Length: 377
Image 1 (cartoon, rainbow, N blue to C red):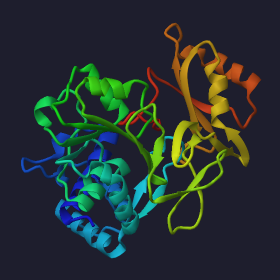
Image 2: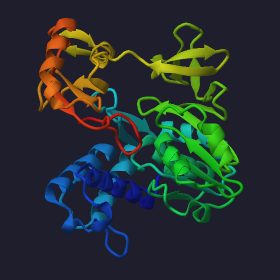
Image 3: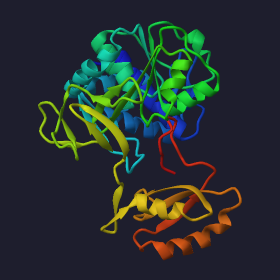
Image 4: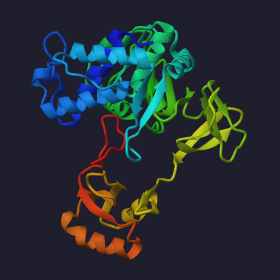
């Protein structure tokens, strides 16, 4: 399905993502021909990016001296395996590798891509190793033979000049918010797509007021693939046709046609028969701490109720950090980190030992990735 050129795009995006994680200026590592200069990339970043390429295409990279050599190895592995492993973002726990076979990608490309099959160009603003970015740079253009372009999500670009009638621009809520705040407008005939996070109320209307001919929202997850599509925030998502839907209105589930095993939705949903859903909220986040089930939602609720706390996130420590919970806290403007002993004392009165965060990080805003989703700290 993917050409050698598309595999090259994915590999370069993996390297770019690892550079961004290390707070490096990605563009400084590209030469004048637009190719990454491996000799300039720090060794630890080079090692991590190479590891991620191997995980994505399921092969063990051998020694290489050029990016094209690594891309060739990845392409050979892809042709042999006919699948890729996509990583979850880790916004609700430890990142996981999810298998997406060639057949699954073909089916999804045909089903979801039909909403954009009349497009003249597909433009994605997310990395191409991410399910959303890969869909617009790989699945859909391969099935419907539409040109695909990847651009950095910079709201200050001259979008009205860059875009043209027939374009489909696939962004995400955080980008669209900055896009509109920057005063951007669309030329006639452009479709705006949003996904990766819940769509803020009123975003559909504001994008249309800025000139978008259509606004489309996609719902899904790396674990499942695309689940549903809608054209208005007042309407339910219509579940894609490659999913079977259970008859249980209270606890609806889905499964891919021809594959055994029902899957829960990523969120609690309101089911609208026969195939509609409104996502309501994330499923309760239950983790195990020393063998005891702990609700991260409950711990966050208790911590949030302290008058010094403006916002917070709680999650399990990474294996290298320990086996307990950690908390990220945004304090009220009148407070500083000296409040920590009081916070600990307060939490000890309201939480069990297993629920008690063992480390605290303070910051001005909650940690998010480039698409506005929760990230680790």
